[in-house]
Length: 153
Image (tube, rainbow, N blue to C red; front, side):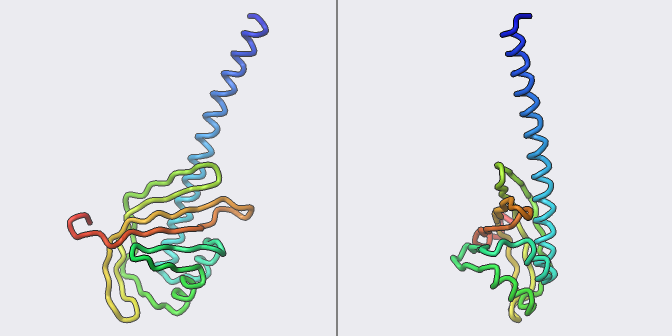
């Protein structure tokens, strides 16, 4: 085999291996972020402010479908005061997509409980954005839909 042809074969093989390694890294990142998000959702359900604090970025915000914005401090205060008591906070139809150091989780979530004595039950779509930092993945931004109509739950 000529030197040029051998170089092309080696370069092609390296490109294939790099693609396989990138997919393996992406799958590992998807699994890591999915597990971290599940841990976060459980912490919210249980008003576990310490776990929430470790996962949320300091500049975290969540925007609800009605336009209300909550910061990390807002959510931690709600958890510490146990303002919301959850009966259900389960997600379904979860997808995790990773692009380098950014991951987005999209899922439908069923929320049921009591907020300051007022019962609620909602089904909403949400997207959670995580970024990889020097200290690991952090939840930086959330976006939730308005409550879904009954026929789409």
